[in-house]
Length: 163
Image (tube, rainbow, N blue to C red; front, side):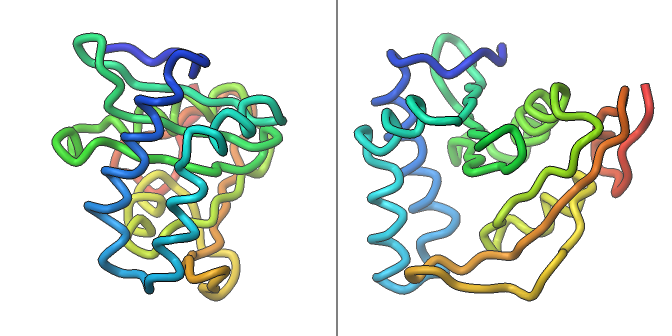
């Protein structure tokens, strides 16, 4: 198992992972409009476009298979975080968030968390910043975390720890 930068060669695998994980965990909670909106975001072409823009992505590999992904926009906003359904609840999401946030200590990081993912983000130390909202059928909860320099997330705690 390892976390590494998202590469161009990963686009198809990440697209499939996004779609499969979304269909498993989030799609049942959304309208048809929300599902269609996300499927456009998960298309390989959309992922490639984000990689050309100001996005940084990391993948979690196990046995040379991508089982998790996180994308950070403009080094300030978690745009996507998904773990393959067969690998959920094993700490992969936490590892990806912690890895991505290591270089962002000292900043406030935001996320528009899907409603089913809010408890996980709260365990990571994120706090709700505004009422839940909806955009093109995607329901989300605005959340944020501010990390002091030399700070890492602590698993299953609501506050970061200083290293």
